[in-house]
Image (cartoon, rainbow, N blue to C red):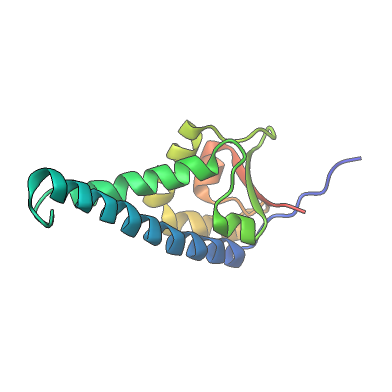
Length: 139
């Protein structure tokens, strides 16, 4: 007997992303505060507004957050709340490299990828189609 799989709608994916963006913003503030404290302690200056440190903190925190939580069967807060799970088409979990590529492609093809999802029978985004990944609803 074949196991029936339920695919999340575009709305639950967007709600899941909204949850994740709030948590990601709090991670940005936390890591930024810690980095500013260390920077101030080491250099004696009280801000790094004119340095590359701020954007690098945002970039690396975002890359770490999604690469960590999308890999090895883990889920983000939004995915847990909306019962989403990311798997490869062969049923295995994503590696950190797969999760990294998925994030980069999602950033590049965000609107086009979601539009693609509206016409795909398995509700895959363009990124998921390219990487042979599927987001399913966990029961």
